[in-house]
Length: 231
Image (cartoon, rainbow, N blue to C red; front, side, top):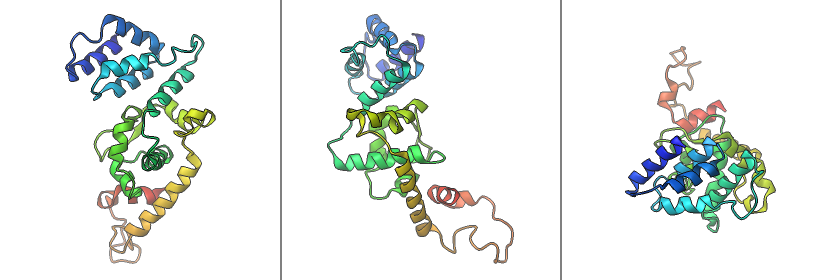
């Protein structure tokens, strides 16, 4: 309860709210979390930056109230939350849907976390990842455009790649990791075709005058090229 109280008070200060959260709201919030710290963290991440966090929280607290959930497990509890947040995205916009699947698919399929800049370079012509990040912010751990992007929790990966496929209303958010891995591999080949040249540091050192392996190659080439060459 102390963590929930601290986080909600920070959100209240940012939104310039007074008298919120009330003790009743705080009790409801901690009760609905069922002791899952990730549930609390996820909700608070979602509320940060929202124009009316008090109203958004009230809506989230109503999730699952229409059906019995006394025996609902932690997995089901998180799935319902993930699904409800994702359902608020622009699924009637075909450009958004395409960008979501390619960007989220890349985040899940990449062998090491990639930055927003690298993903933008790997998928040129899509909606900028910064736009997608704003909508998916509660789901992701990310800093600036040069910082690697990671999902909030392993349970989100399992939800998107496994369980969402079996629920009709969540199929639109489901990620086909095998397909996305194949598409990422093709994109990596395109990156190498575009960015590799005789002038690329490290190219031709076997037959050049300098036979030593160049140092700090990764500092001299792009992140997307480095990733493509490794994987």
